[in-house]
Length: 394
Image (cartoon, rainbow, N blue to C red; front, side, top):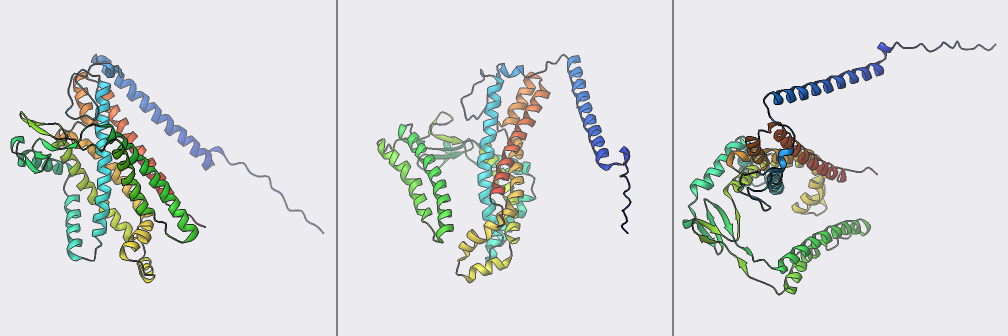
């Protein structure tokens, strides 16, 4: 005799007992609270500014700035607008962040490897550097290096002259550069083309090795391209050798290129400080790789350098990249301390603009937006790179 299972109707869960629906309600309430708070703060700020007769908006960017900027990547004068002044500050910040990150990463890798050296002296020197730089506030380091440049070095008339066309004084480092000529422009273009070809060649060399197991001569060809193509362009335009050398005229040097004490102190402080943190990131990343990997590489005849470059670092990068990205962001944001030693970065230009126009809200908003943009761009690039080198299961 067949029996039918009793089918009980599905009971409805009360709305307030459904976790999913409750979560949606909570999110709506929180979002409404945040939007309401933001609206209140905005209206309150507008009302307070109106009471004090302070104009709002970004119309001041089209007005004449009426202040000079000591260093500029592009041409600038006091007759230019506030917008151009902000562009100058942005480019100065980009210059510091770009070169600072490159030098700090290089220093961090070298010191991180040195921290694990089998040589006792090298290991201890690296440890002293890391522990010293990490435990001294960055602003104090900037003050120290700036005072060293401005107080310890001689004035221009008694500047150090280690070689022809190079002068070091309390006004900065002055050095010779090639005189303006089309040959150097086209040599630079060919250098860029060489870098692009090297990237393509490296990708081909990797795929060639995967297919055949043989190592393609990528390195010597790359060196040949990097030297040969610019050299060909230089020779094709007459191989000019004229130099634009700095000369002492009056109280300072003119001609050539220069690096100001403010920029030098800022770069030195940021690189040494951030490089110490990066060294610890590199050291911990290398130590995260099993020692058995090193023993296996040695057993098949790889040298210590080949083991480090081909076995250890590729695996350690997956641990190193995320915290290394954080240190890159820290270096960019710490560059705002440049105002303490007089380097005209974005924050310095914004502060001067705020003092002259009274547009404090707009100025601070621009500072926040600029650093947010730099951080997002850096994070996006490093996340792409981290994903690119991630292990792919077969």
